Amino acid sequence: RPIITDVGSVKQPIVEECSQLWGNFIGGHPMAGTTASGIDAAVANLFKGAAYVFTPTAQTKPENVAKLKAIALELNAIPHVCNAQVHDRAVSWISHLPVMVSASLIKACLQEEPDTLELAQILASSGFRDTSRVGGGNSELGVMMARYNRAELLRSLLQYRQNLDEIITVIEQKDWENLEQILKTNAIARPKFLNS
Image 1 (cartoon, one colour):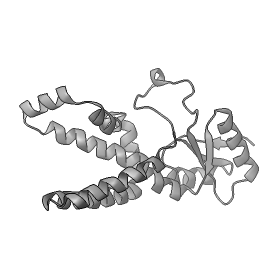
Image 2: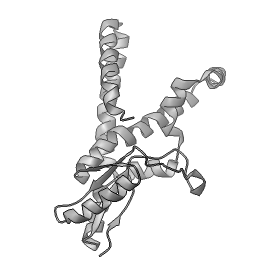
Image 3: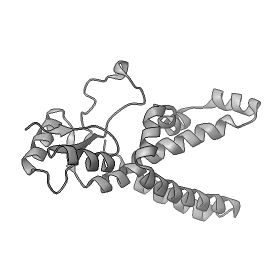
Image 4: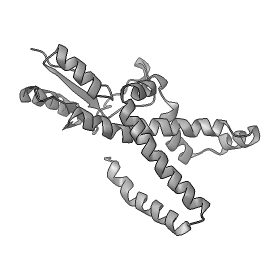
């Protein structure tokens, strides 16, 4: 029987539904893409060096997982296997939350006074470009992330807000040593999230 897979960024709902319809369904999520959409956004070697996650169930045949892993390797991707719920929680942090934070940054900037906004648009450089990239991308994809991974995304957003509130408090209190420690800790931690 043929193996059926998908490439969506949320796994638990689709794995639950599709596994009931097709016993040979295995959720898949290549961790690669751009902010563009449509056929014109196609990129050769998109998967090269990218993680490609598969989320089998307890009923999935190991040989079917092995076949999909082999396909991922043929695409020069790096296959990973995990539970669908663990996947959804992890991508809420490193994919879905950044879209919402980035979108919030752009929205907040647009609420500035016209003169300040105009100057900010002129001066915006690499920091703003890097931070805002995913929030200015495919809106349909962003809505799907929020809709289908709602619980995990809300959990991440609330924890993010708690950390942002902590930084606001530190700045209000002029606790520069604490702020420096937070920033130093983050500088050490960041490379662990970057696999390239």
